[in-house]
Structures are given as structure tokens and as C-alpha cells.
Length: 94
Picture 1 (cartoon, rainbow, N blue to C red):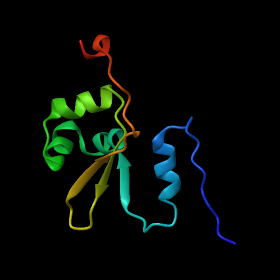
Picture 2: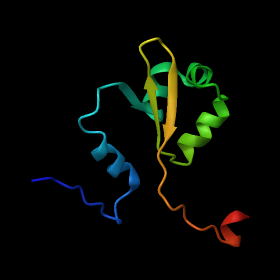
Picture 3: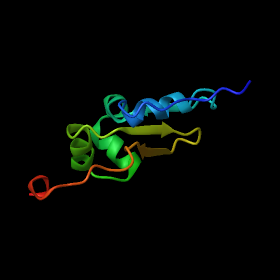
Picture 4: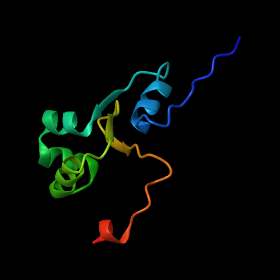
């Protein structure tokens, strides 16, 4: 019998992503907060090719960014966002 995973629309998309990752090959994947804590903000920014203020803003605004440290020493980052994105109103754009 085939199992299916239901998506609870009341749960954040990050939880769904973590559920779908079960069974995938293990990689050294960290949250952006953890990565910055290990490397320091300047080094983390250099490794990801962004500025330290960009990292600070991503953390401050609560973006769901996950960093993967690859075997060759390089790093990449992915952001998990809900879909569809909330519609911005004129008041929130200002």
C-alpha cells in the first residue's frame, strides 16, 4: 500500500520541507543562524558571496535560510518560502 503525506495548510512550509527531506542523503546542512555562529558573520558572508549586512537582515527578518557545507569546502544557501506569497497591501509596502 502506498503512503501519501498530507500537507496541513496551517503549518509553515519549512515543516513540509523538513518532512520531505527524510530519507535523502545526509549533508552538513545548518540554519543560517547556526552557520553564522560557527563561522562568524564576516566569514559566513564571504563564503556565501554576500555582505555581512545582508546576512544580518536575513536573520533579523526571520528568513528561512539553510546553508549546505559541501565536501569541497564550498557553501551554498537556499531559502524556503511559502507559496503563494502573501499579497502585499499598499500599507505594508511603505
